[in-house]
Length: 80
Image (cartoon, rainbow, N blue to C red; front, side):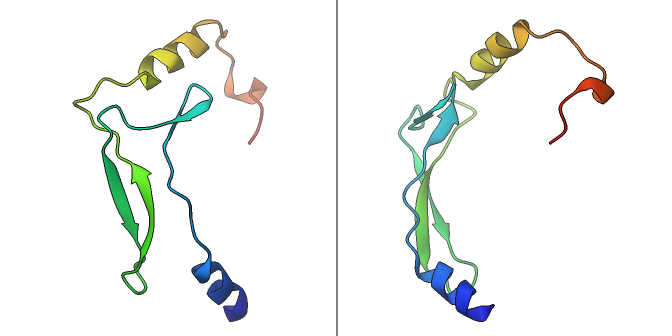
């Protein structure tokens, strides 16, 4: 098991954006944040940093997608 962990620890993780409306996007202000390993402090990757101050298309997209849906009881929803 430790072999697998050591192998994964060495793999690079590509920079990630924000997944909004079915596609990856940069943050509106272009801000990013570093992800650091809690094990050894090594830089793992960079993520797009969303901001409450910057307008985001995510709420409008969610409303648009949900507007055509009919409410269903929990028992009728698809599991997982």
